[in-house]
Image (cartoon, rainbow, N blue to C red; front, top):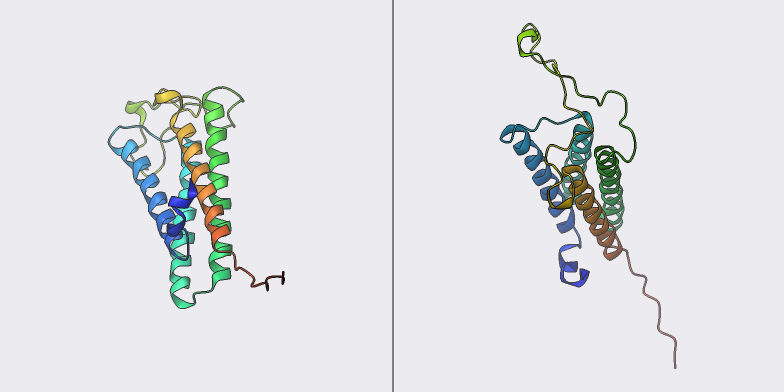
Length: 179
């Protein structure tokens, strides 16, 4: 399965693709918020933090790669990228578990209803309320909530990152034994 994508996983290509994937996920999240009016709960925002970390790390790594192209650097970076995506999968799976009521929500994840007549107009930058972490506004399309799909995608991205790290491993040149 991976053989078809292996040429895209060497040197700087995978970090650039991972950057595009992280920006795409952030764009999709902000589009759901802006156009579908699905306000993010605190756990949704935690999931976004992982993608922002990927963006910051990858932009920095690609800049450093231009300065000095060291194979060990790209190996270490792909491993770090895999660990960050794996963290995102865990956060998203936890959120999906809260939505499916497998475990209780953390404190601060209950819905605060916003009374539009009582909004504090003196501080509009402060959050006036947040949706509940226990509700799935997407209603589990295709069997998974948005957090569940995020967990699956993050796990796939982590797997590909670890595969890219394996491809970038420096190969030792061992002499072949004489027959």
